[in-house]
Amino acid sequence: MEYSEAKERYIEAWGSLGSSWGVNRTMAQIHALLMIATEPLSTEEIMEDLKISRGNANMNIRALLDWGLAKKVLKPGERKEYFATDKDPMVLATQVAKERKKRELDPIIRLLDEVSAVQGEGKEMQEFKKVTTNLKGFAKQADSVINTFIQSNSNWFFKILGKITR
Amino acid sequence: MEYSEAKERYIEAWGSLGSSWGVNRTMAQIHALLMIATEPLSTEEIMEDLKISRGNANMNIRALLDWGLAKKVLKPGERKEYFATDKDPMVLATQVAKERKKRELDPIIRLLDEVSAVQGEGKEMQEFKKVTTNLKGFAKQADSVINTFIQSNSNWFFKILGKITR
DNA sequence: TTTTATTTTCAATAATATTTGAAAGTTATG
DNA sequence: CATAACTTTCAAATATTATTGAAAATAAAA
Image (cartoon, rainbow over all chains, first blue to last red; front, side, top):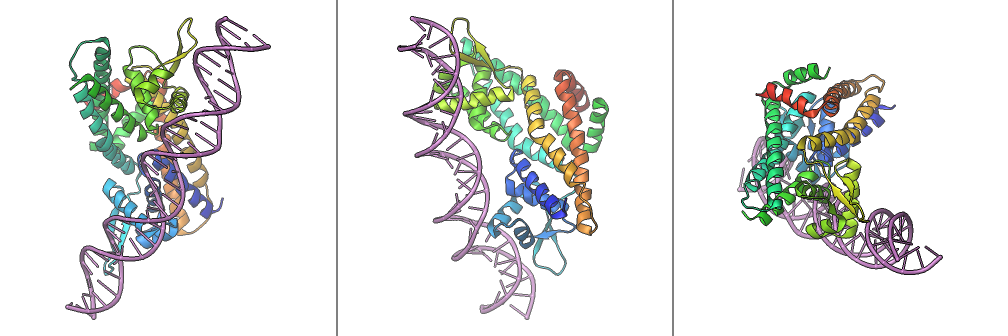
């Protein structure tokens, strides 16, 4: 396979993977590009490589910064901003876990807390209470697992998992 | 909080959670409804409760069956089909893990296998090879963890995690 | 076989999400 | 301060995805 083809396929795949991970397509593609870049990239370079507009590039770079998946790099004597990402997959995983927990798990736990406290009689309501309480318990278990994963050195965490799953 | 309000909020939240988990909104809402139902529901009941069209209901019920998140229940002497879901959150998690692995992780591992095999010299290509190879290794680790989770009794798996994260 | 209940399909429509590009905003430099 | 380099914003245009509803398909019952 040609390098150019491999690169294209990799970027495209990363993009569609992103969409099923709560990250928009272009955002994931920019991330993919930063992963394989040998040095920090400017907005221009990203625009050119992915053939996207300036506005689009800017928006999605901001989103990556916001997710903690890219960082600004200033080259001495240059005014332009450059961007880079951490290349360690474990750092990526930790960061995504952290953000998604904040955006998804935390809110759903809060909601389940509220709705499972609903008062009243009736078969339907009893069932509702039971199910939402179960879900809440499960969500909290997941939360504590994720917290450990985020806080601790994730490699350590994975090593233990590795032993279990061997 | 009123039961009706709690129910609405729960269904709405489950729906938007679904969209960030690779499951479409309506599909997740139908699942939410089945979770709290005291007995299997018919297409009509689902349509009415969620105020959606027959076509929409049908399509998304099929998708739930396809994901293994709902099953058909036939009532003796009745022609109509009813649907139910497993109410154990752990079963839900296992099933989602299984399907998402199949739809996302497996394909990306195959792709990384291909593209990381690209041949040639040059700094850029070396970096590309290095990064994609790392990602592949990470993806395979994740794969084996998920496999254990799917195959084993997930409660057992979670209990061990619980001990680690205590 | 014909009727009737039920499910499925799918083209048209509606709703959402993304992208563009040019104008406005910002900030370093002479 | 004025200019130039660069970044951000956002309304309009496009693209993508979800939904409707009526017609077609299926299959049990008469």
